[in-house]
Length: 272
Image (cartoon, rainbow, N blue to C red; front, side, top):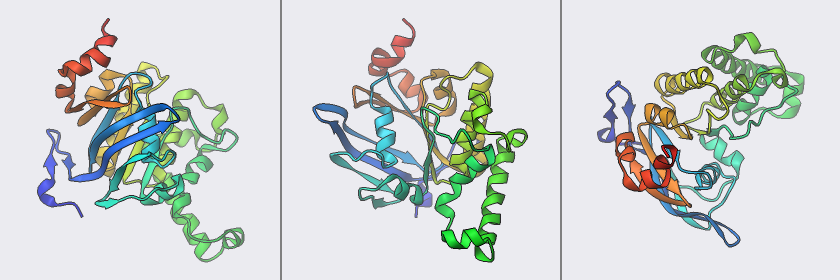
């Protein structure tokens, strides 16, 4: 359990608790290529934590380490006060960690509703035979999972497309459906890999609003990768900056904005 003495209240009234995840001295290599080099930072319960940096900085690799897709050669991950052993992605999901992907990963031929229902897989306990009969416990479980999904659909304002095949949707709505699928898992930690990529201004405003609402209304801890610095500075409580696989900055948006190493490596490039 997190110590209540560690809780801080933000200017807008949100409560941020103690360390939920502690990433310690992570090094990840692919042959002779070092994708992440001795990088450490933490994610606090209830916060929005941004990970930024130039292309190739190691941001997505770090998210893949957290979500179990990659296993680092060195370092440790602690989650909810316990050291995490090497895990596969489905085991990480069962811990309460959900994610979206830089490249949309949805089932194009399935409806929006069915795609979001796949986010409930870690909550389904009945076996295949019981589900096929759809009676008793299996029926009750299906109804309970459907209720969660319907609440997410209402929350993200996608009722009008709930029966539409995902393949027919425009890009911005696909991104919202992917967020819905992750939220359906009721995660303790939500990982968002470039949730605004490829969006127009209006779509970015909508996604920013939903991210803030998820954090505020559900209390979900969020770690996100994003290249839009306006979005990062507006949404985030803290920002960690990576460059060539190393951490070069960590702090509040204002601290990062005024960090000369960050300006030289990343933020300054945007103003050339």
